[in-house]
Image 1: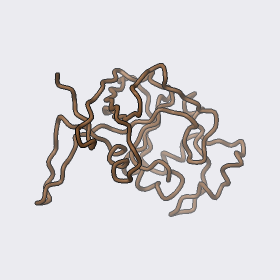
Image 2 (image 1 turned 45 degrees about the vertical axis):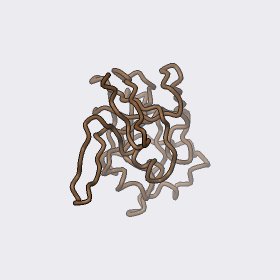
Image 3 (image 1 turned 180 degrees about the vertical axis):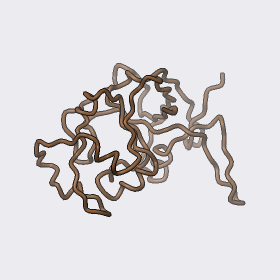
Amino acid sequence: MKDQLVALTHPYNELQIETNLDGTDFRNKPKIAFWTSTARPYCEWMEDGSERYYRDRITSEWHDWTLRENFGVGYYGYLIRVKESAKIYDIRSRDDLDALPKEVDGNPIFPLYFFKDAKDEKPSGPIDFKKVAEMGYDAIHLHEKAAYELHQGIMNSWDVESTVWLTGSKAFESVEPLLISEDMEYFMKNEA
């Protein structure tokens, strides 16, 4: 898995990463989990329509979304390197999503119509995150294309490409702090 970026409102502390996979909230997300998005170079659009990438500036789909939506973003940035041995469930399509185990206990928060896809009205239930973790997965990664395709349906609260970590920091190789830029729009690698 590629390096991940997280922006927190407080300094990172491995011992403070909480996970509660018992049940799903109304957004088809675990009640409590750690979220990241794939790190990539910051891109600036030039007046002539070209792109300029900065190798020392880092951002992610999630970070860019929070800035566009004025959602609020944490000011403590961290680059997370994931262990090669990490087991990641990739959602690249509706079929990948459908293959995940679903909660079947009749959670009253989730009427079946809530989980119909906007395009094909195919019903689905909320993801059973606890079962996914019991299957040995450390995380579920929603890829960019799938985030777009499934956003109007059952994944509408997973706003962009992102990864939810089911086993806390167990799959992390390292966590490196990043400096926030003066204009708060991107993170910088600390080259000191």
